[in-house]
Length: 411
Image (cartoon, rainbow, N blue to C red; front, side, top):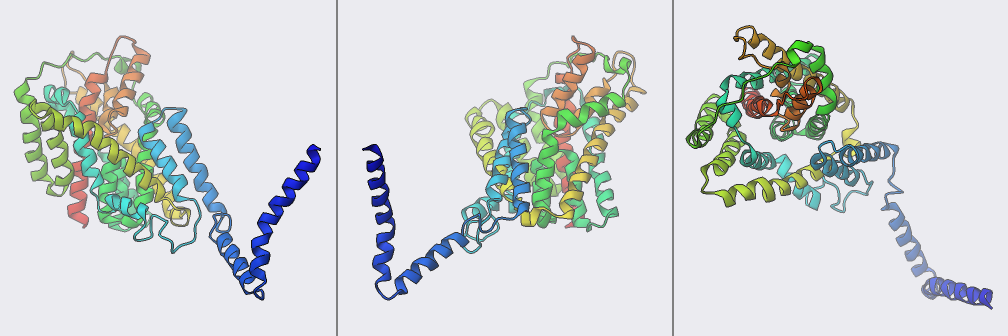
């Protein structure tokens, strides 16, 4: 009895599927042909019909990003949106329906305009400024030099990119990866080399996430056991007046040197003034939570979606990733070595632990945390995080200044 019910049900389903086709086919076959053409058109517009193996490669990369963000907890606020964006950007489609990120008028293209036009990065800097405490840097200004030293990676990468055949404008955009600052990399590449923006942005954010993997071997290679356990004096107490004056003085000093960096540095110091003034807490809270979180979501998703396989899988992209890795190593090494050079001129008791030199790259606050973790490995009572934050925030300022210099020289 049950089998009979199944057979009757199957028969009714088949009748329901084919009756419309047979009814339309009675008009002389014209409508039947139309249905077949519609089905063919539907198939041609599916991702299966447009599939190529290069899309599978990028989908795998996106899955790796998501895995690292969730399972390894490596910069999840960046890697998860970027990884999912890579999946979105590499679903094959038929052009002409305003789907892809490079099709004018599509939703993704409209959201991507914040990257292309370069107005996402300043808003990110506004949030960073509202979250950052510059007290340690104010208390010990000489640590600013470590942030400056780490920017050697930017100019070394510029030279390397030029040596292998990139144009000067492209070299400037690629070089900024050495600062380990994703928003700055996007800001500069949007003006100097928009055709390379996807590769540059993904490389910059990838290496920011890989700070815990790349930096420790370099730090250990360039220091000895005695240097790794140097104890630094606790920073002095910074007054409220100094905290308020710092963003004003910092803005004027840095932008007079590099006016082209005004969109980044202006927002950074404005956000910090909102935080430190004590009378604009609502605005500071919006900047460091709602605003920066919203922009991070949009930026990460659209940067990931910009890695369409047909535009991203090129020799230039591979070269950019290689140069990015080298620049990150050079920047880390420059900060550590410069700290050791500074110690030659400092009295005993005032010496700097060279491990904090690696925090000169502007991957805030991850590179400072790496300095702390490596230091604790050799002395479980020697906490370096507070000291490492000084060169870390100095690196943010330094990379923005360097970007402004490159922009004024190359644009």
